[in-house]
Structures are given as structure tokens and as C-alpha cells.
Image (tube, rainbow, N blue to C red):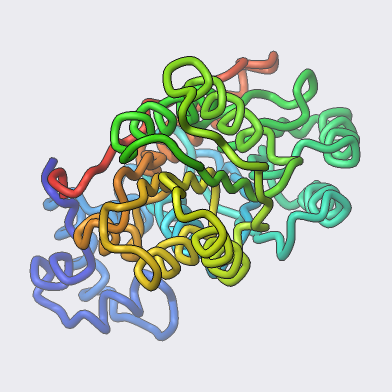
Length: 340
């Protein structure tokens, strides 16, 4: 797949400076009508999403639709990439002038997420979020639905029965895939470490179930240790991985079902030669790319964010689907060292 044109290519095609393109798209300073027209023409010509943001194909007569999205971990590379794809995709929604209303939750606390969801009422016309599966969150979704606001769950399902639909991976299959590669690549019988972000993440729970079930079925010589909660943090994952490596000389594999993989990568680099312990992680980032390249990581099961955001906004923009659309599963992107 060809790489999409970025701001540098847009500046070159427009014949203006990169700073002028940045000012035009982000409204930091006034840009002349001539420069704006040149940027719009170039964006349309090379297929840059800025064409829609600047007005091509999105006339003022189209209705505005405010897409609310709530994510976690603003500083985490995965969520940074997610936010960037959302910004790109909202400019390409057909039939409306899309506007993204994006917020980040500071923690996994159900009360915080429930309050943040409620705060989106009146600020958006349709809402999607990553959230833990908890009665407080379900109650907030029920209140929003009663007000006519449709709520979609992302990546990890929540509010079943009241949310408008789920979009993400089939997490049970993701867990089984992680188990499959662990069984194939492990160097003999021994122990396996499993991390989840928290026990209230429905998606992590399903990944754990699939992972354990597969290894129980086909690799009884691999013992999955008690699941560890890492709160998707690097430091906690790093410390507990080092402890496990010191305690279990026969540690054969590690599966990080959510965030925090950076800690496992760092610990393995310190304590084991590359490839001695199977490491499966859940996002393709600069850190995991480097881990694949040097042999620390065996497999990355990545969420296809571009496809997810495109499908999400298409579903959110379809106001005719008032009923629950069920679960929309996207196939994951599978990465090994040789695929990079």
C-alpha cells in the first residue's frame, strides 16, 4: 500500500512553505486567500485529506456532525496514533461536515470514565469510547441513550445491551493467536507470563481466555502463571517482568495483552538473549518495531487504526441505524520481524 501524502508533500505540491501549510490547516495565523487556494488545489490533486478540511467536497450546505470520542492514555504511543487517525478520518466522512470532539481519560477508574461520558452530552451528536466494563459506565451509557445520544464501544466492549455497537478486534481470537505463536516458538516446556491492563477491560479478559484455552489444549507443557495487572504502565511491567525472569529460569513466554509492553521489552533486553523468551505484544509502535528488529519481540498483533476509524465514522454518521449494530470485527494486522 502506498504511503499517504503528508504535510511535506502537500507543501511541495502547493509551492508554499511547510509552515504556511501548518498555519493554514491549524489556524495559528492568517494565511492569504491565494496561498489557501493553492493549498486546497494541491490537496485535492494529490488526495490529501486536507482537501475536505479546507472545503473541497464539503460545502457549507452539508450538515455538521460532531463526532465525540473518548480515549485513554493520552501520552501512550498507541493512543497518539489513534488520535491522529481519528483526525484524518473525520475529514473524509461523506455527506456531512465532520467535527471531532476528542477527550482523554486520565485513568481506568469507572467513576472517572462515567463522568467523562456524561460530560459529552450536548457537546457531540454521537459518541464512541474506550472504557472498562463496569456498572457505573453502563449506567452512564443508559442515561446518554435516554437523551438520544448513541454510544459505541471501541477496542474493548462495554455497556452491552445499551451501547449502539462495538468496533474492534475479535479479542478471543487475538488471545488464541497469541497462544498459537507462543506454543510454536517456545523453547521447551516451562512458564508463561500474562499481563492485562485491568480485570475490568472486557477485551483483555477475552484475550486472556483465548490465550489460556489455546495453550491448555495444545501445549500442556507450558504453564501460564497467575495473570498480572500492569495498569498498562511501563514501569510496573518492567519491574514485575524482571522479578519473574529472576524467579523462573524456565520462563518461556510473555504475552502483554494490552499496554505497557515497553517495560517487558526493556526487561528482556537486560536479562535474556534475543529470542530466548517469546514476547507477544498488542501494538505496532516505534518501540515494538525496534523490538521486532532486534529479536526481542516475536509477534505484534496490531489494531488496523486507519480501517477502524474509517468504519467507525461511517457507522456513527448513519443515523438511520438506531438499533444496536452488534459487533463489528476487523481483522488484525500481524507483524513479525521479516514483515517490516
